[in-house]
Image (cartoon, rainbow, N blue to C red; front, side, top):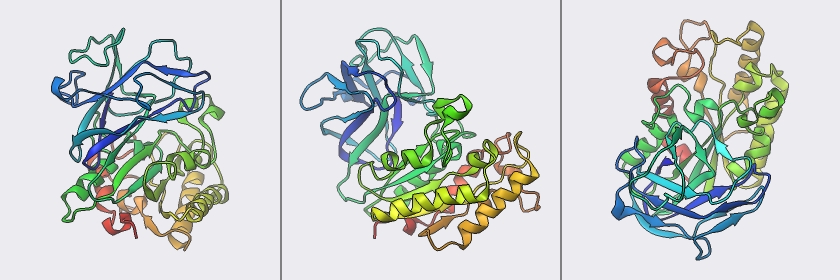
Length: 350
């Protein structure tokens, strides 16, 4: 599986998850290496490193649990692509996975985790069991967790080229003068909603609701001092929720963040007129939610996705230059515009 760091450092560890499993998960071997390129399973042999778990190569992850590898001395740069491989010696049962990784994962038979030349039987744009890579930096700056839906996950951006708005944001931080940049943790999940599970409409891969996953995907990640909440559009366009229900969900997430001493940024709901589920009534809901977000003093800052992406013609559509073609997801240019709208001081621990 291909992943990319946001910050560089001299040590890393990998998080493997069996959150949605129905039985114990056995990892027979796990490795990390630098790939030859981002669109190939082949690695640079001299960079291959074995991961261990309390000093052991094999680890069993209990049903519903997760494990962290031992810290691994390995120099990685900012925006560094990594290949993480796992060998599964026995049947896993239901798989914990991210179905919209926007990066390739390669599947083959047998234990190939330590092989430089990988024999591929299949590929998917998924991450299987892999839920995070922590990097230790020389200058501790913590992390920012961005909890969102498909606009965070990167739908509409170019596959394999790291064009999500969080990728552009990490690149801005890298290029900004200064020594201490926070890690940017993309916790986007296509179809995710504030108060609805995907299983309600027959698609469990859309995840559990934002309130249910907040503690795991926000404060539960390493070093998080700030959370960005970018949810709400699916509560409108899929579930046709009222403004009051959506506002309740946002208020709850903000209250939970503050209780834990975290800073919280909230995104307005981006326009989606022209998308198949759009109606005038849903547009009114979107406008009401955005008016509340802009006027509320509950959030530390507001990232106004609506203002960034909306066509100034007053129709409630995406700007044509930012539209990926489906009228709801921004293209690469739109993702870059979102990243450019973030004031970098919002992301610094204070």
